[in-house]
Length: 270
Length: 317
Image 1 (cartoon, rainbow over the protein chains, first blue to last red):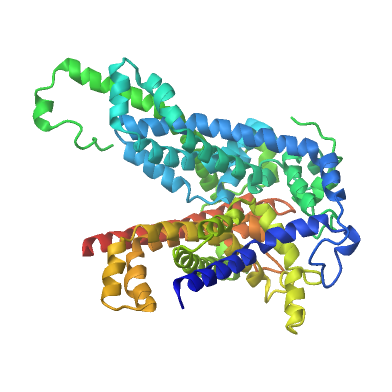
Image 2 (tube, rainbow over the protein chains, first blue to last red):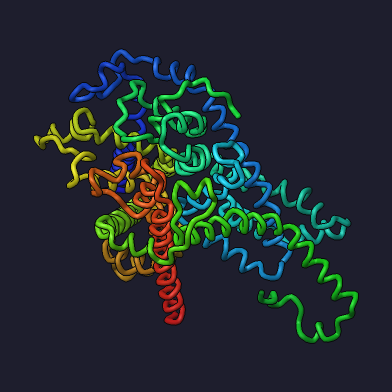
């Protein structure tokens, strides 16, 4: 086999593997465009015959406030994460604080803690503080997903900034804060984008915190109806976006998604 | 706190003037000024919730406690209750199967794909990038897609199997297969991570090593097992550890696909803890906290095993 055929074979295999890997994504789009009556068809249609955009229209109509809440929570989490992690990382990378190694280690360990444990702690704390079911509470909870990650990524990146640049700034009379703001931060644009992107994605897709710190205490319908928040409901947004025909709830009691759908969609964004 | 090594040499330190010392102190204060917000944040939003959770697991926290704010201290009663629960052993088994099954297959597939894409053929970079797309997808969406694809009646997976004459599999609704169903979804989600890390690991192996082995007449199989795989050992270790920690935490995927059921057939510790605390009915926050803390213990045990083996390998070198 000569080099060229070998390459072609490799590319073919690669394309097939990628197609298999991405099939679920295609399937999501296919299903979202399928007419509700065809969804239960067996076998399912491989391509959307007679596609409909009703699902998308309905989501935009019903879920817009929740998508708005998601956006606010996401952006808030990004802002908080950047504000906390970038300065700390700068100090860890460039100012050689005593005990910096310990801080790094804590950030590493923090990522090992299962979300469910944090969720339970937050539930009690937020209950005491009276910020259960609030956008602020959700931003605070979601930020714990990203802050340690942000510190580690920023530290790794800022360590790579040449020491000469820092000395030059110092000679020009810049203090630590000035060097951070005018030298380090502009250079770190790429890592800011990386951290922001991941933070936003995590907060946007967080389900655990939204379904714990943003739900009612008990399961009585009135309670869950009045307290489960838009942030919980926004998950339903994703859900019905993907599945235009909302299928019957299979959950007992007041799950996040039953309570979500049983509530009028016009809840104001807090 | 350990002093930063190499900051000043002893000789210099002895000759240090008070002015210099105060300048160094100021420098430290400035440095910690930058770190202080995050330090306070970590105490309030990491340490404190963890403490509350630990405290919770030693108390009997009931609905009434929300109103009165008091919960009696019960010692290890919650842990005893959890250990004696009929759910404990099945949940431990499920956690082990889910975690080990996920990381073993994810790692094997990720490594195989990394080796494959490392061959550099036309489109290899583009295809490798496309492989990462599922990583960016919200877990909620991924889990929902898979729940839909694995649907018993109208799922595409069963339709595909039917072509080969395999009769309907109740992936998510039968106790025998629900674990396989969630495993498939979780493995799919984990492949990009393993691919990225292992690919980075491959890039760090110097080309000369391969040149030498090809001069010695090693075939592709031998090269992989004698060169590539051993040299990837440090990267593999960290990938497996991170995979383990991430998989132990997995909650969204299982909850969305099966809610841990049917029965307890796909209930891992994370699911069990959530179901006790927030799954409906009256919240059993205290046992839920106990289950959660057991999960932390498991994660830490593996963390320590990792550090131990790491140290041993370093000693060998």
